[in-house]
Length: 77
Image (cartoon, rainbow, N blue to C red; front, top):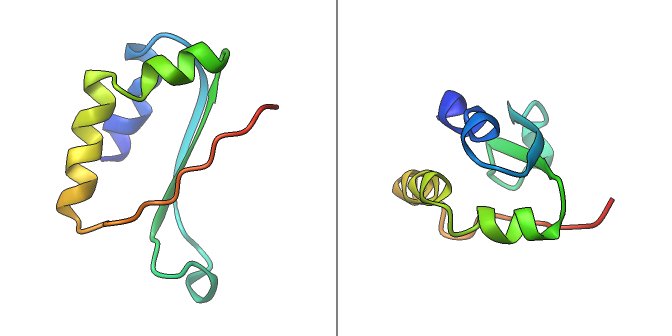
């Protein structure tokens, strides 16, 4: 999964930076085990990423791990 997510940068236009990691603070994570942070060129790139085929493949894999409610946050920097 990590390699697939990190490959977004090479395969999806508008991604400037991406990180993926495993949680190292189990007492504070409310059951979540991994996180992804993506910096996009602009809001349009984010909007194009959400329905992108490669992103949706990972969404389906994530659902197979029974993550009914992943946390997604978007903000301007």
